[in-house]
Image 1 (tube, rainbow, N blue to C red):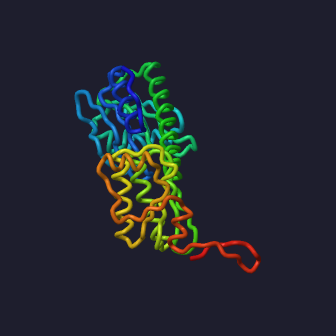
Image 2 (image 1 turned 45 degrees about the vertical axis):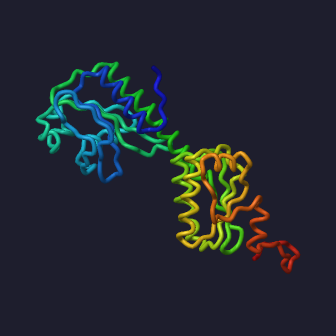
Image 3 (image 1 turned 135 degrees about the horizontal axis):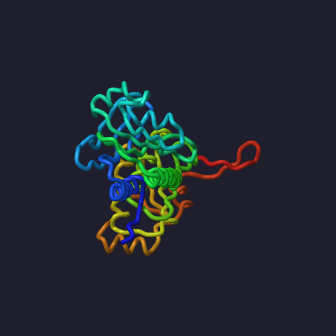
Length: 285
């Protein structure tokens, strides 16, 4: 059965399970570092529990740091006690020896995310196919990281706030509202509403592709939060099919101001175009 992968987190979990079925090393893990700390994001232990999910250690004291410093290639240490790089490390003393394999997971820009590694308290005989598998999976995870970052950038741009004049802005919502996107829209809208000291925010729904009960709930949450911070929301562009869905799901807009177009919403709040001294039009209300 082919399993769909929606993000880096899911890809990391599937990849570790797959690798665990092929490589008989005790512990496989994926760690993320911020240059200060190294945190275990995913881990599979076979017999001995060498690492736990969420373990967090100073980055400088970890084997992952050695892997990152080694560059975009695989680092293999067959005997932690004999290697000049690891024999005096605290982690080696705690493990009592063993073997380590690791390779960095990087973004396409070269920025490091973390590492994918294997660890054992016994000396492990690394085969060529093991090295190739680690290299391939690190490349795959790097690709998924870039996809995640690109998707995040698209999400952040999917509902841009356009300032029209002092105290007035419009947010065009285009496409489909997913739970993740709804969260981004709400957070971005609140931040920009405060930054621009808005009095009115026009939420234009003319580009919204699909409206279901969940989408309506997210819209109502956005409207309620705007009211709580003193911003008056105005909905525009509600299509007949959207209105029918709202009625079918027993949602009413209540006291929410609704206008059939952006122009009528602007007219309602007294926004108009007037010529300036140079004869050019600008908006005011």
